Figure 1 (cartoon, rainbow, N blue to C red):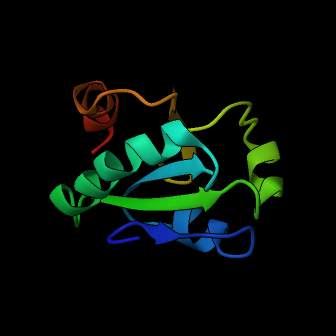
Figure 2 (figure 1 turned 135 degrees about the horizontal axis):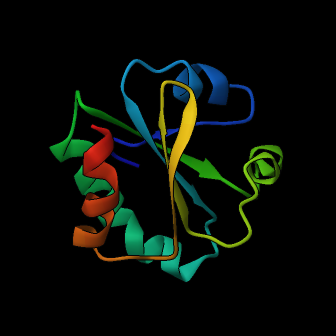
Amino acid sequence: MGNAVAVSSETFEDEVLKAGTAVLVDFWAPWCGPCRAIAPVVEQLAMEYSGRLKVVKVNTDENDAIAIQYQVMSIPTLMVFKGGQLVERIVGAVPKPSLLAKITPHL
């Protein structure tokens, strides 16, 4: 999994909502082709923005309560949280420049 941290329903609040930095949450599932396609980009962001952006992954098959709570209708869905609040939602496997355009304002 690399630099992105796997979070579960039990650890989501501590890892995401109480984080001191902006957090990129990747909602994904192992069977999802587009999720696998975007995974390397998510890992690159975790490395390149280490210290400024925390990157976590939520397996929606194993943690459906979080996916339901945040109304994840299709995957991959990426969300940016800052100060415990959802500030950005990106649906689908989008190219890295598009992701950065959505994430950078929140760093």
